[in-house]
Amino acid sequence: EHFHVTKVSTGVYDVHFEPHFQNTPAVVATQLWEKSGPLGGSALDNVVLVSLSNSVARFKTGDGAGDSKDRQFTFIAMGE
Image (cartoon, rainbow, N blue to C red; front, side, top):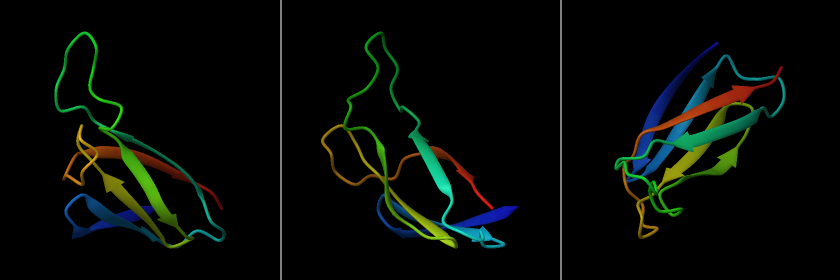
């Protein structure tokens, strides 16, 4: 299975699945922290799954103020 990513706007990314899943997959995502420390980052530093279909998942990443920001994230998509 393959995928490719398209940046839609600041902090918004479409992940296109190739080939498409037969049904809508299960998706989990985690944003990587940019700063380290004993307490970690803000809970607002996060990635959100905005929309999902069998062919594309849209993610939005943000900063500690809750604003859209380009950030690194990882994801897993599983399905038929």
